[in-house]
Image (cartoon, rainbow, N blue to C red; front, top):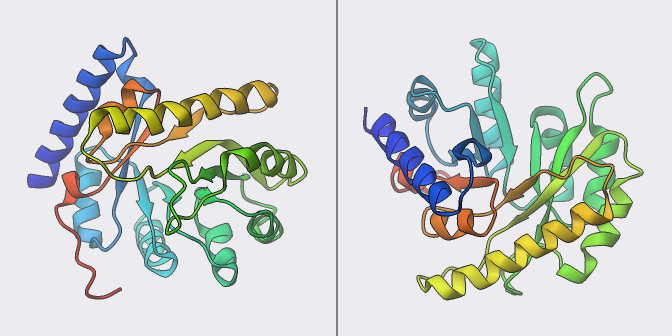
Length: 234
């Protein structure tokens, strides 16, 4: 029941932020970040109407995907963590979205390993918008080169951009990085007018309102839905 209540509050938060930004509430998708959470927790979110989930750890995500496939529950699964070359096959075979693409090598492997019988894997290019040494993602200047590379990979479908800005509780600083991401998103759309560039994934529990005001189309919320995470098994 608590997870349902949390989801209700987040949907209200999204709706209010959309009103402030003069946007339709359905223009922002909620991705429930379920890393380290149990299938029972995820089932509570499903019962409350949530269908899209994000996982940071490959094998943990695959185990959950297989569990819900086995019980006949159709969900949308996003990989949102850093991806090593030796784990690309599992992402290519099981996930619907890969949000953290930042290297042509990883793109090539995902494309080669995606089954012919599956729809193309939706991908987002991750931008290191705050230029943090510890964060994954490419520099903004390298975005178009990677996007052009993806045009030649038929088993991948570029849908937009993703970022994890440096955490700050200062609204002005939040909006500076988020606005820069929106400008890159518009640049990408103009550069690739024939592609389905429709997703700007940014905004988490701490900056969801700022992200929506700055044009996010997908917010990634974990703690505010499921509570604090348990990393003891990872």
